[in-house]
Every structure is written in structure tokens, then in C-alpha cells.
Image (tube, rainbow, N blue to C red; front, top):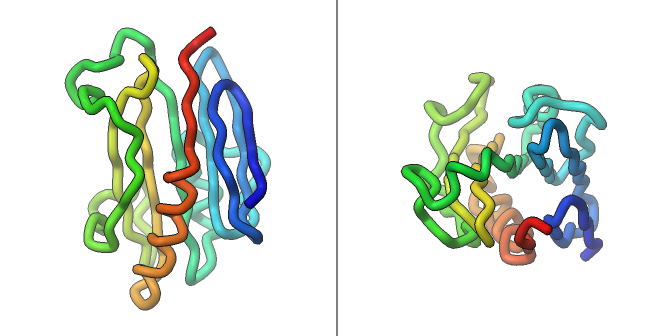
Length: 146
């Protein structure tokens, strides 16, 4: 696995996976996918999900304002490490596209509030893709702000 570390976020990438990290106006965003993703994209990857192959999976991790840490949706204090194939729904996709299913989880890690947004495009083989995404999530590390 190949590491990517930026802005206090570290993740290990399986062979063939791609990732981008950015920080704009204090907001950290990490995109990870099992296919080549655009260099520039929105927080939840509208370009990346538009070019998603038939057996693709995409993860976006977006940080929010510090004041939201441990509040409301961000109350959970653990990084999501395991998604299930049944977690995904066509109603949870930002931009509805054929055969794409999405899922969101909100959490706070080391005092930093985040949203994890995942999109999969596979009716068949979804369990295998989600298992690969879970391996990436298990490697995810979030440092506290400096």
C-alpha cells in the first residue's frame, strides 16, 4: 500500500488507487478512488463520480468548521472504519447517476469534524469494492490541529 499524507490526514492506498488532498479556506478535503480521479474537483467529487467506471468506488473526506466538532451530526467520535454494502442508497448520491449508490457518515476525530461521503457504482461485486474501501478506511489517520 502507498501512503498519502497531507494536512494532518494520512491514508494508505492499495495498488491502482488514486488520491488527492487539498485545503481551501481552512477546509481539508481528501478524495480516494479505485480509478484515476481529476486533479481539481468539488468537495464531494462531482467530476470524479461523473467519470466513475462501472466497478468504481469513490471516497470523499471533507472537514468542517471547528465549532461543529462533537455537535449534532458530528457527535460520533470515531473514524468510520467499516461500511457495509447495504449502507449504500441511490437517495444518498449528491448527483444522481445511473447505477450509483451513496452513503454519508459524520464524525469528529481528534477535535476535527468531518463528513465521509462514499459512492459505489456496482450492482454486482459491490461487496468486494466496499471491502477494499474498508481497508482504506482502516488505514485512515487524522491528527489534531497544530
